[in-house]
Image (cartoon, rainbow, N blue to C red; front, top):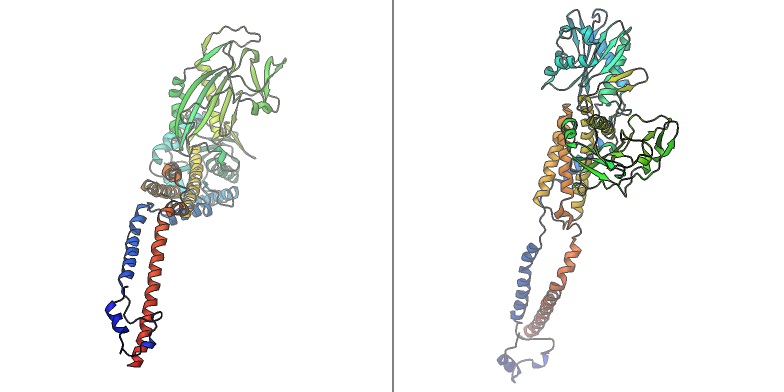
Length: 604
């Protein structure tokens, strides 16, 4: 601050004591003023007061996300495989209950099932979480053991109300009769897998019905033999779905990340100069495909589409066989059969999304390669004349009835007959079953027994749908846990990432749906569990690939500093340096005043 001139003049006047001790460079007689320091600090404070407003203007909104629950779900699914509750019931008809103990039979069935089951808990299986009940029906009297609730569903003596001898001769009729006897009883009481063993003087037959029951009829000499067959039906058919290892690999999970499947049916005319074929797809869609879509509804949201293409030759070559009088293409040629350059199949509106598209192709060969037959590795001709490609679809070669060598082109337009079209789509149904990981045959061959598997017009039996629901529930929850775990690590690693409320809600609902799916699995409700797990996976995928989050995933603090530092850094540096310089000056002037005060006090 400026010095007082009057005080300085008085100090320089003669007669003032000790003038020779005063050094103006290191001493001052007046206190330094606060005005300059106050002004500089005021400027700094005004600058700092704008910092909260600046931080608010660049604030990143992050909806609260339950990171702990997301990580817990991801870890628990990997460490604790999903196990379903399964209930089994065996009914022995015309067995003497006095010679056979019901409790021993139940224990024997359990022991045989444990031998056939995997020692490790496999995700999507029953593991050791199952119960077995046994009923022995003899002469209108029944003895029960084990799971009493499941055994009570069987009404003693009802199976013999009809003509049992005649119905057993027709598997389809007996299957319908068992469904009538048991169908109403199972509603709302949980799913029970049941095997009926009927002792008769004939060859042993084992048949698996369309629903959740099977029957073994024949000359069962020993009870142990019947128990072994019952255990095989329970474990290898009902639990493992008729597959060898009891599980389905990820390449047989043809469901898109959005839970949708598009079945695209394509009719390809190789050379329209020879002939042109069309089809009545709408009728096939309503009659044959609609029941299949309704059956698979718990697993995926399925839609269909169709198209007819022309000038679509195959990319491989077939050789003429004089003995068979046909052109032959072999299994080694299958990787080159699909002509991706000429077959423009990906015309669906869902092709660019996350839906899964399965292509089913009916290939009509040209006259120069007709009839065209597929030869199997064993040298035989394929009965279906088609093949599949996992996760892509299937192809069926359909030879026109007018197919002859050296056929002259007539440019005629024809329609595939309903009979031929029905046969083709039956092949497609078998291919669809294989794509989902199931067997397409009507028999299941075991080391000791051959089981007859009844087919249904819906394409998939109830016990097959239970198996698929368990497997897809496991797969969906694994994908959901992996996606949410990745999302948790991504969001926590990028603190500047915007998290909208919509993402937070999707994560919350995904966790709730996964919890419901696991709860349904513990009660053995496989179809509801599949629906909830699919919803959990869809919500997790939607949250992870949300557009608002993906667009700023690279926005970091370093980027923010680089943008705003040219505007505020120069000004802030000048203000801070001015405050430091003024504070240093004030300390120096205060030290001068203290030095003079010491000398003045000594002279006084």
